[in-house]
Length: 486
Ligand SMILES: [Zn+2]
Ligand SMILES: [Zn+2]
Image (cartoon, rainbow, N blue to C red; front, side):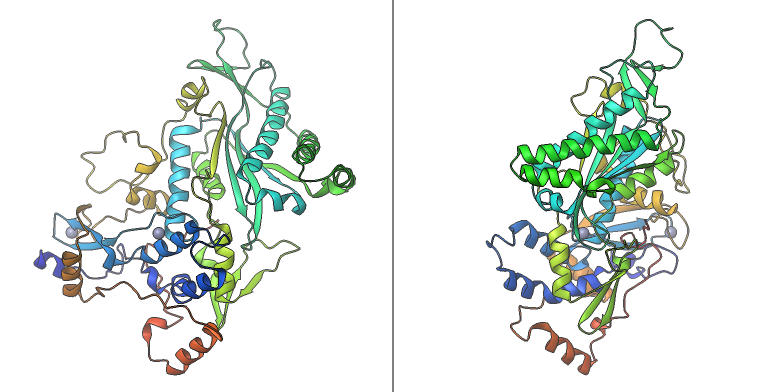
C-alpha cells in the first residue's frame, strides 16, 4: 500500500480534492459557529432547532480527509488519489447542495419527465403572505395545490379534444429563499405543456392526441399572455380566500389586498418553455429549480470584519452587493436550512406516486443525456436504471463538466474506487505518510464581547498563519461545489 500511496501527488489536470477547509465559507463557520450558537441560545433553544446546529457541525466534517476517505486507483500504472467523505447535508454545505441539485435534475430528466414540452410556472405572493408561508409547510402545500388546480383547468381549456378529467404532470419546487439570501417562499413548477388522459381503446379516436403506451397526451395550444394573466387573477383570488378561511388575514385585509394594483404583489411567470427534444435544456432548467439557496462563488471577503455576497440577479428593492458580518451571514444561511423531512420538490398530477397513469407517462422518459464514456468502452452497455440516490458522483461530474474525473492523469486509463478507509489508525497512518493533517480543522470556541472583531484584528497583525490567508481559496480543475453557474 505504501508504495502505491507514495505516488499520490496533486496533478495539474486531474481530480483535485476540493479542500473545503480553505474556502471562505468554511473558515467563517469554523470561526464563528460556536459564538453564533451561544448568542442564539444554543441547543434546546426554540430559536435554534437542533437540526440547524447539526447541519453546521456536519458541514464542518464534510470533505475533511482526517474523517476518512475513499481511495481511487489506476490498475494500469498504479497511480492513486484519495477522496474525502461528504456530509450529505441540506442547506449549509455548498458541495453537497450542488450534488443534490445535479442528482435531482439527472433523475427527473432520465426517468420522470416524458419527452414532451415542459413549461416553467413561477409564482410569488405578496410579502404579507410570505411571512405565513415561510415556516408552515402545510400552508405551502395548500397554496401550491391552488396554483396547480388552476393551471390544470387552464391547460384543459387550451388542449383541444381532451376529457374533462384529463390531468397535468408536474414537479413543483418550493423555494424558501430569494437571490440575496433573504427569506422568500415562492414556487417553481415544471409542468408538461398539455394534459394526459387514459388512452382510448379505439386507436383512431383523434388525430390530435399522441396515444402511447396506455396514455393520450393532448398538447396545449394558444397558451398566450392573456391566458396566463387569467390564471394569475384566479390564483390571487383563491389564495387570498384561503388565507381568510384559515384566519391568517381578516376580511378587511382581503378586500384591501384585492384592491391593490399591478397584480397586488402576486406574480405568475410562464414564459420559459423547453421543447420535447431538448433534454439538456430540461436538465438545466431542473438544476435551476433544484438549486441551493446560495453559491459559494458569490461570497467574498471585503475586509477583516465583513463579507460581501454578490447578488447575481438584483431586483429594484434588493442591493447588488450584500455586506454582512460573519454572524449575520450565518444567521441568514441558518434561516434558509430546510426543516428535516420537508420535501423540497413534489410530484403532482400524473407524476404523483399514486397516479394510475404514472407508469405509462414516465415510460416516455428514456434515452438519457449522452455523457462521456471512460476510455475503456468494452463494458459500455445500456446504463442500468438507477434511483436518484444511486447516481455515481463521477457520472454527475461528467454530466456537468463533460469530463470524467476518474481518469488517471498519468496514463488516461479509467480509475476505480478500491477501498473506503474509515478506521482511525489507518486514516492517520496514510495521512501521516502523505504529510497531510491527521486532525480535522479545529473549531474556534465561543467568544464573548467584543466577540470576533478583536480576534480577527489580532490575527491580521500576527499575519503568520498561512491557514488563514484570505486569498487562499483554491481554484482546482474540477471543483464540484462551486462551478455550476445559474
Ligand atoms: Zn494510470
Ligand atoms: Zn457536505
